[in-house]
Length: 128
Image (cartoon, rainbow, N blue to C red; front, top):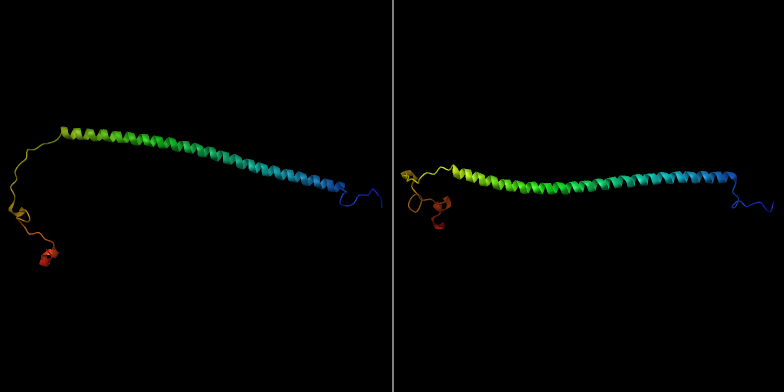
């Protein structure tokens, strides 16, 4: 035995150094893949966020346009109603009131004409 011979816990052999170097390279490659996936995920989320913002703006614009269209439709409906009433008044046919003779079969009902009661009242005279 030699005084300078290292113990097994301290001595790194060339094979051990190569193994550690290869393991470190593999870990670096794995971490680079993880970073690429995370970067791609962040990129997708940024795109989704941008699309959601665009959609929100589109919804706001659509809501304003719909409100303006509803207001315009209400104004046009008011104008149409006014025009229809004016045309109806201009073309109205007025007839003087006339007297119509009452047919004897069309006499008015009670108190001066036909007795009109429900069936229950007619069958039960005390219920009146």
